[in-house]
Length: 180
Image (cartoon, rainbow, N blue to C red; front, side, top):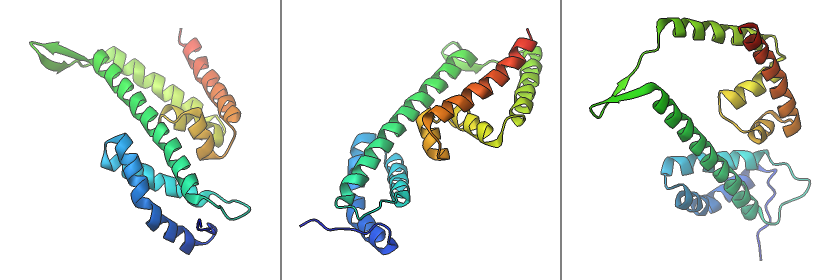
């Protein structure tokens, strides 16, 4: 007979945590191959689970935990691939090899000043956006979250995230058009 947990009670969630934690961690570790990454996803899994507020008791909370863990696992793998691609791209653009040794090239002073001026302009334009629009933009562009992840994090729909992103990008493209 399956145990029924009232996940609205902290003691029930704590008991569930201790009963399922080992199995969940093994599940994550087998797929992520990194203990720290598995721990991070496991912690985030229980944070999401604690935020889940069903109307009734959950008959299979272990199944829900594994479903949450699997979703977070996929998100973690995608983010890691994206970060790796971005880092690889940066290395390819900014490092030259001389006799097999990497040499970091310094950008030209004019290019550096121009970049700083453009960044200042973009940051000032972002201040003109609503706080929520600015927050959505920063989560997506600077934290690397997907539109779906931003929507979950902020508590809005994915389509609203897309609308905020369009609004912010139009604002930023305006500065680009002015500088041409």
